[in-house]
Amino acid sequence: MYLADFPRLEELDLRGTKVTGDIRNIGRDAFTTLQSLYLPATARGGVGHKFQSISEVPSFIQAVHILLQRTPTPFGKGWLQRAFYWKLSTNSPDWYGWDDGSDNPPPPFFLQFIQAGPRLGWSWCDFDVHSCEINWLDAEPSCESNDYATYFEDLQLLERRRDFNFYSGFYVPPTEDQYRRLCEG
Image (cartoon, rainbow, N blue to C red; front, side):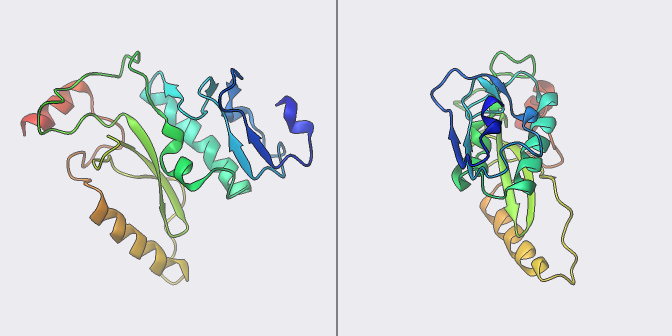
């Protein structure tokens, strides 16, 4: 936040530094000209950040969503799509292992952003093809709007590319017991 006083700052890349902080502290009036932002894993919400619990994730996603509403392009598309490589920490009490020699997918402990037309959402995923349900951040466009056709086409493409069936009905990763039952079923 010390750099927020630089009114012409367009790019801020702090990857590889030991800078700490919290992405949620970036206010609506801070970094008003910023076009590119990359924070290190040592900053809460930075690239490669590991969350200590599943329950803390929605506030981080909301903070990024607010930043995106103000400045639509502060993050590269690849970084945004893979949610800055955010994931659940193996030290989290919510984390559990799995039999990686089986045909079952690993638990969905990674995060991804999903864009369908003008609509942005996010979900937990296994960083392969299996995803939990989408947690939408924006309302569905009206069927009378110009954006609806694009939204509908993008949504159909998403459903063809990703396997939502294994974690169908889950908006957060299943508990270890739920995961084991899914694997048995």
